[in-house]
Image (cartoon, rainbow, N blue to C red):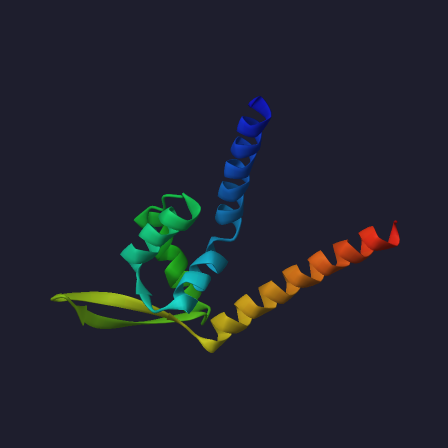
Length: 118
């Protein structure tokens, strides 16, 4: 039982570290699925990754992604409120694809090394 608790704690810590390190890519992935506003990004990040983001962390990151051309925003009226809706750009999609290709190459390389060492 103790080993299971350690594994769960390790996975929780690893997930937090991963989210912290790759938050920009995770947010791009959320935005890629559908155009979304900031509050929904906060809630989805908490639901999917069990990490509570503060507005003070999210909005500067969204502004940076926008400045770098990975997302764009526009204002829309939604249930009587004006919301800033974020959408991924072709450059943002290219960044996600490049990241995914990199990960796949790393996994494939690791797999080939294991097979060669047998």
